[in-house]
Image (cartoon, rainbow, N blue to C red):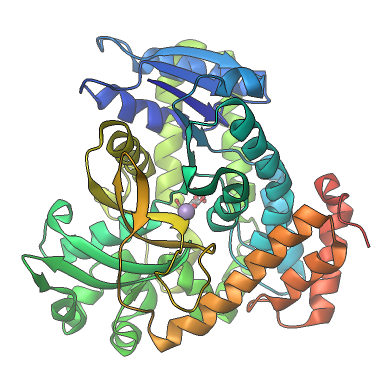
Length: 447
Ligand code: G6P
Ligand code: MN
């Protein structure tokens, strides 16, 4: 089995490699191809992986390349985990928005729209190459904004592209623990779009246990999302929102915290990553140790602004392991490759799952996965309070894709102006001007 990782010099690649090394079952990945545009990053991650596989029998054979067609040829699976414009791009997404007084965030609000406008054209080209060179490959998309990018790629790849995110899994794990349940035993009733979903039920032994937690104010504040949203608001909603909903329910507060923080998350990570790649270049023999301490620092500081907003310091030990996205990816790959039927929360085309959206809209819902791919499970419709947000944000996602396909500046402006977190068409105009001034990748958007 051959796996190609696009963005193979990326910081989280060793997590995927760890998951591959832990897989001892027959039919596991035997060949791993890392593709990246930056040979320096590829070399650094190559050192980490070489040290990580020490002492493990039959690790996958690793090759690296900067040639896309070479990477994907013959691949059974392709992981797409690219960051168009790098972390410098992320800082611009955040900063231009914050300077206009609106949320500046990697995937949500104006920042997410800018990131989508920069990424979709690249993702479409990759999808076209895969359809031409490796038409039988399954594509697992980690590239953010994952909902938009997966939907764009599905134009060329249909249901062979599946988007994944670690935040629903993390939420499920934390809520199960708060309930004293084993997450592996539970069926999580979760629905929405990527970074815009709600956990509505936790089923074990034919019973929904979430009402028990919703009735327990102390239990509700024993985990991250509970502290973030507050027991009362969770009881009002009757569901536990994904952590990204904080930007919608506490917009003004989140913008204030981010503006006061001085450095955005992207800027903090850009510094950290520069130090990481630089240290490995100087001391390749310690690559694995350097990576592990940088990884831990990244997890420890993840969501720090949002915690500061509610006066919480530090994270639970179980949240420092890793978000777990590599485990979802491996579970998905095994289910497809070995026809091991399982249920995972994934980004796939809606079909007739959520009746407020059309069949081709990519949604984030529980799916049954086997060798035929991922099919959304029939679930309850979204509650009324969620419907408006989901439809509004999906219209923005669609405008981003349409702008990227047609190169239309007017449609890009529509995407920004329609976003529920951008509060004036005039602001949207200034945002687009600001993004285009600072991002060469947006020059393709014309009148
Ligand atoms: C979560 C989200 C990802 C996002 C990441 C940002 O894992 O699910 O989609 O990219 O957080 O984390 P970072 O450490 O880059 O701020
Ligand atoms: Mn995510």
